[in-house]
Amino acid sequence: MAVLAALSLFACVPSSSQQSWGPDAPKRAPKAKTSATVEDAPEDEPPMSDDEQNQARRAERVAARLLDGKVGWLVGKKAFLVITAFSEEGTGVGTTAEILIERADPNAANEDGETSLCEPGAACDGDPDELLRAATDWVLDTGADSAVILEPVPFGDKGPPSVDIGAIGGKLTWSKDHLDVVRPKKAPAALPKLVVDKEWTIKPVAAAPSPSGDLVLVLFDMDPGAKYNQGFNAFVETRAYKVP
Image 1: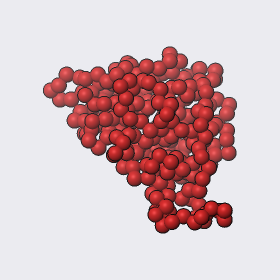
Image 2: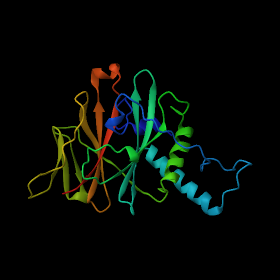
Image 3: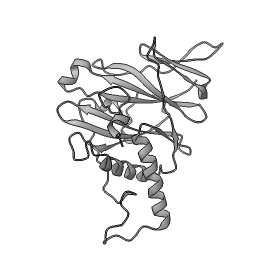
Image 4: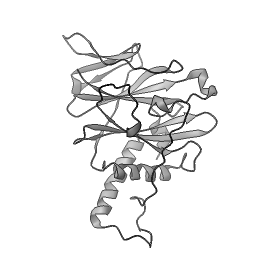
């Protein structure tokens, strides 16, 4: 599984999922527990029931799709699931899992929704099996084994970045610091401005609408340029927007 290549939504440099993770790596580590990749439970633990094994297998399938760059959707919670990576100069690549819901302020920190799956330079850095195990545990912990898998749609490279999304009846177009929802015979509707520190250059790279089209997840390439050598990570910023 080409995990790191799939996680990176832009060329060469993997990425993270929140601006608050800028120069500092995320702090929370995944729980160590038996996952679907382990067939036999340790001798000091009771064997898994058939229902538990089936749940673990579902969780592993969801985790594998998320690690391959897909987006998950939790119907009951109306929440997006996404896994991204970030590059830390001189250390390595970290991997982060995130749950995103509609919020009054899309720019507010999503600390409760973020979980570190692998720290830069740790043994799991570059180890697909360890990443899959950690991601599977996270899916189990969040009860997301029944998540619907969505395919993100990439933004075009020609002219202002834009992407056609059938579920919203139009397209998203990037305009300096925000996205506009553009529909035929209607005035463009602006989504909230993306607020980030000046050290990063922003570029939208992909979007995934909810099945009903009332919400859309957007992933942004955050490029620190020369600042990368000064401790500013390259990562992916994520936003869940309500579609007007």
